[in-house]
Length: 231
Length: 288
Ligand code: SF4
Ligand code: SF4
Image 1: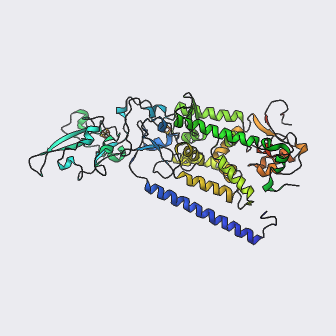
Image 2 (image 1 turned 90 degrees about the vertical axis):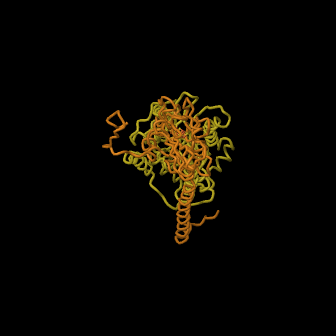
Image 3 (image 1 turned 30 degrees about the horizontal axis):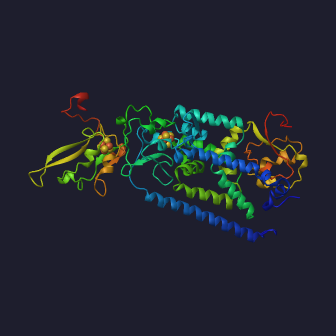
């Protein structure tokens, strides 16, 4: 009914400008919305067990979410437009729900694309990240207390985390037991980070690329026998 | 004398009754809802029929199904997908190539109800065209999507692909992607008529290219009855495909344009029963 008579050119131009403006505005709102959403996203995001190294992973993953559905502990989530990762790819945040390290690795078994390696020999071979005791100023064990929680929840206790005794120079007569992570055995499951009793975990699982340093290749340690003093 | 756009379908309703003027639309909605339900019933009731989402899934724990364009992007970016995803893409791609046209778009795609709603509102509210885009743009976008994956070594398109976002959102819950779908809806409603599905979507373009010779299609079999009321042109998301088969008596009656998605709205909305959904090679559905 509204427009049986043809709109005049001025009116038509006005309508067009209004719709253009409305669309431009909504586009800006979309961008702002996404910006605020992504600034809200928190926690280090880790990939599921068996994941290919990062650029290859986001290339391989077809964003089907079958790993998410296969995980019995609701550990895995799919990234949204606002998360740091490629939208639609799976991740987990250790402090929220860590990897429970199922023996049969259901997430990797169902992955259709090869983004998760279903040939992973055992969950202990997974390297989702590496735990790092980041905040020594707040870690209770570093204060000389016997918290040990991260050490005790570790599924690879005494392999991935050990307690290194050291004399407590503050009291002069006690020992401190320093949680020490060994990259050779840490799977990056995140149980230690989740269990840390502090408000903010002192131990955090980081993506391996971030956590690991790399020695100059010419270094040789005289106290190491194998491989020319390299291991 | 052509009917008004707002009133498309009124004659059919009067002549054919309610069911026969909404039949294909309802069957289509039913099909879309059923596909979604097959995805959802696993997480809701523990009966897993389809694992995964529209990008890739596993039917009854045996048949892999994958979005062929997703797998092509992955291939282009330099990853050879595992056999499961590859064979899934062949199965899905092969099915639509044989079945024909852009059946995915009208019968399965989760974005379709949204863009249909925008088109319906646009007709109802009498919103006239405010911008137009060439229809071939989608083929260019398809090429760019694949070239982009090749050049950047990443699935660039998947950041913004509304089809994946809608599929994931419906199954796993929406995140910020909902804004993008809202923008798409507004774009279709206010800026370009049938803007997304009819002009931009590279997945639709892909199925248009592969499904051109498929079995199912629409034929303007009774076009001598056509009264030129134009209702079919008003509702068709790809009206350019109707022109020759309906109006040009020299042209084959079968709608041959690769953009036709066999949605059957023209069949519903035509009071003169000009159109029929036909299977190629079946008797009475000859191209002439
Ligand atoms: S199952 Fe594999 S392809 Fe699917 S979302 Fe998980 S990692 Fe990606
Ligand atoms: S992440 Fe923590 S709990 Fe898990 S294996 Fe490594 S040290 Fe142990």
